[in-house]
Length: 454
Image (cartoon, rainbow, N blue to C red; front, side):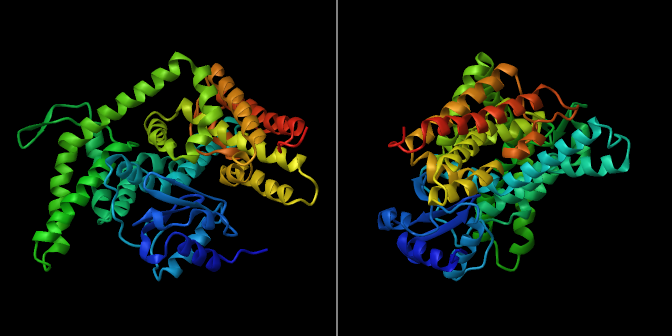
């Protein structure tokens, strides 16, 4: 039966305290993310009982209402109910959280979430091109290879431009300003000057770095842009703002980005990445076991945003990341959990119908329907998924596999294909798929998923 999204929107808005209690709302892949004036006014038990709502998570200054794959339709209905017609980023100006950690997580979430799907698409395309080239269908010197390879690489190469626009949009400023600065970071003559003769900016030594595929420098630059832009709009005459505000912001923040922000932030990002990979290098099997078993629980509490930017940065800069494969394994074990429930549930039962839909959803990389309908509801499903994901993750670590894209589920096969051709990582993903999906499903089939089952 088709969902009544207008009804869902009205009930959710009423449940979170009404339109007057909402300062900002956006959505990610499966959740409506509300920023409320007073979270105490929200009636969480009532919201959880709304037909079409899978659950509620309150963390990081966000009141998150889990909808599922059709969150875009629900968000459009919320926009309409609030009398707005904007992008998926914000319905009305947000009151930024005072906690700097919460504010940082909000910025990262709002900046990276809109491009996660594009990262997955680019990874699939790159994997497909590599596969076709490996099997001899596509010659490396052909026009088709040139075009398809460029389409797959363009997002990563021009990442600073795209993230600059996304961050600018999230921070409420003119998104084209940080996008222009991002464009300067990957400007051909700038890239070609990296590693060349020493240069200066009006006498100040200029440390040029290759910012193609970079993540963090442009996000910090976008934050500076939003601050400078707001201050300029306060002091400049209205008649001059259209030209002078972007001119001064681009010139000042752009120069600061090249002179200080870029080198410093890149060094810090590299340091954090080194630390994370050092921990992985200490025991790949243990790292895979822990990430494969518990990653989805981190997602539930929003704690995954501490690692996601690092993983994305590694893939964008280095072309691959070993941790991403373990995250993908965690998604697969949720597909296995839903499949196990679908096989075990009685024919015609509500659980069986929901589990079949959740299996399909998880196989395409969206796990919330499984998490909130079964994994967090039934202890045996949680235990089975943790065991399946942990074993598969440990195997990935032992095999030394790495990932070349960000796509999950069945599309992960493409992300596991190296640009040089099929290697151990692809075979590792095949094994992970079997362990996480079929192994987890088998555990649930044997143990049952309800406590009363034998």
